[in-house]
Length: 214
Ligand code: SF4
Image (tube, rainbow, N blue to C red; front, top):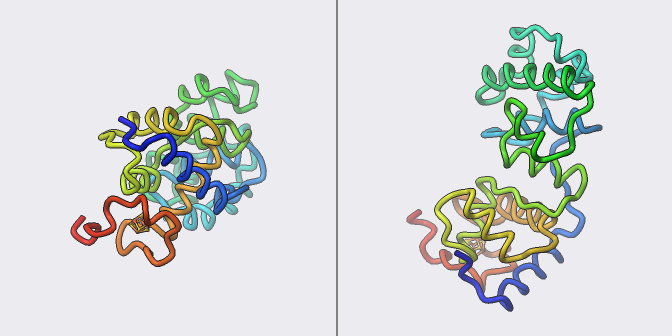
């Protein structure tokens, strides 16, 4: 359920858009292929780690065609410093095979088709479309979930409900708000020891006094 009044939501939105105007993902990529792979690898892993891994991976497997024919052990070796690398290696190769065979090597830019690909869930598809096309979508990762709860925007217990509540609450500019919530959660409203002295929305915080016990 959305807990904030419309005028409060408007103010939160205004401040986030002001602070994070034009922000983009911190993942390095040159095209839709590299972006999708980087987002898949970033699940439960930091963007920094992914940016260390991907140059060698993309050098050896620069496109869908080459990745679809890749040797599984070789891909595992290239991404082994990433969490869940076994599954991720299998998924990206399978994803590449399907895109090669079903989509003529062109990654679909459609949410319904994207979520059918191995390793691509709702959140990954949303992040991909937000970043690539600036689509008006919300993707709820661990940072977004924490931040919007600390700001008392929603009491949703699940990621899915949180996404619905945020869409209902803000309606537009969701892509920029997503980027803003991620960056705010990553660098200011961190899980442990948030930098509350740098916070630009402390008047909306409902956990400022209690976060130490969380
Ligand atoms: S005051 Fe601190 S805990 Fe609250 S939203 Fe701001 S950074 Fe996060």
